[in-house]
Amino acid sequence: MNNQKQQKPTLSGQRFKTRKRAPGGTLTDDVIRTDVCVFSAQEDLETMQAFAQVFNKLIRRYKYLEKCFEEEVKKLFLFLKGFSESERNKLAMLTGVLLANGILNASILNSLYNENLVKEGVSAAFAVKLFKSWINEKDINAVAGSLRKVNMDNRLMELFPANKQSVEHFTKYFTDAGLKELSEYVRNQQTIGARKELLKELQEMMAKGEPLKEISIYVKEEMKKNNISEQTVIGILWSSVMSCVEWNKKEELVTEQAIKHLKQYSPLLAAFTTQGQSELTLLLKIQEYCYDNIHFMKSFQKIVVLFYKAEVLSEEPILKWYKDAHVAKGKSVFLEQMKKFVEWLKNAEEESESENEDVE
Image (cartoon, rainbow, N blue to C red; front, top):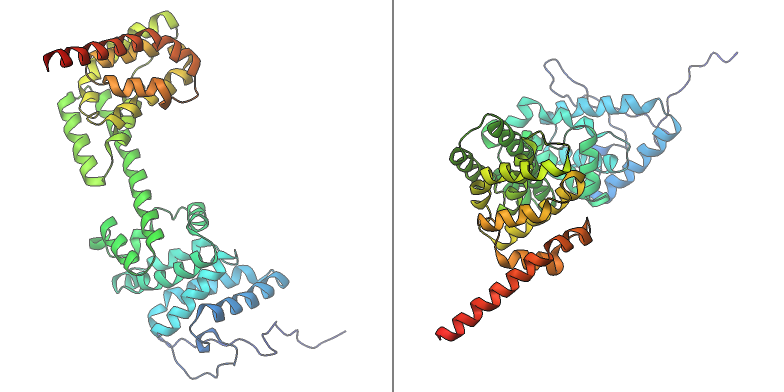
C-alpha cells in the first residue's frame, strides 16, 4: 500500500498560492508567489487567454475542481478593493475569457452587486474590463444568452448606486468605455420591460373602464419616459383593446360584437396613428389577429372600413397595404375582402385629383 500523501495538481510543477487574508478582510503580502500567477502576469488579453487555457485543461482533467473554482472566484470578487487596479483588470479580463468558454457560469457576477463594491465604483469599472474580454471572445448575443439563463439580463444597471441606475447613465458610461453594443443591449432590455409594463397597465385600465382621455395621457407619458415609438404603441394598444373582451365563438356574431367594441376605442387608436407607418402597423396587426383567430376571418374588411370612417386609418396606408405591404397570413382571403373597398378608394382619389385640376 502506498502511504504517500497524494499531491494536488499544480501548474508547471508548482502549487498555487494566494495572498493571505488578515483579520478584517485585508490582504497581506507575507507569502511567496509562484512564477505562475495571474496577478504577476502582463496586463493584456493574450496573456489572460493563455491562463484561461491552463484552467480549462485542469478542470477538464479534474472535474471536481469546477465547483470549488467558481466558489473561489466569487470570494475574489468580494475582496476586489484589496487588489490594485492592475490586478483587478487582469482578473476581470481572465474572468471574461473563462465566461466566454463556459469554464465559469454567469451567476458568479452576482458577487459584483456587493453594496460596498457598487458604492465605490469598483463593480462598474471591473465590469467594463470583464465584458470587453467576454464580447471579444464571443459576441453580444452570446453574452446576452448567458445572462438570460441566470436571470441577470435585467440587472446590469445594479452595477451602479441607486441614484445612478438609469439607462442614460449606463449608456454613457459603457459607451464611453468602448462597449456601445452592451449599452444598446441594456437600452433594448429596458424598452422591452417598459412595453410589457405598458401592456399590463393598459389591460388593467381598460378592465376598470378608465376614461379614454386618462388612458391617452398615461400612454403619452410612458412613450416620452421610455422612448417608445408610436408604431410600437399602436401595436400594444391593439393587443390591449382586443384582450379586454370575451369574444363570441360564433362567427356570425363576433363581427357585430367587434365593430361595437372597436367603435368605442376608435378615438384612442386615432390618437396614436398620426403617422402613415403607424397606420400600416395597425393594419398588419389587424390582419395577423384576424388570421390567428379564425372567428374573425370574415371581420377584417369591416374593421378596416370602420377605422377608415373613424379616421384611424387613411387612404394611402390602406392602398399601400393592399398593393405590397401585407403579410402572407390569410393574404388571398383578406385581399379579396378588400377588393371592392380599395377600388372605391382609388376612384374617390382619382375624382378628387380631377376636381383639383378643374379648380386650377
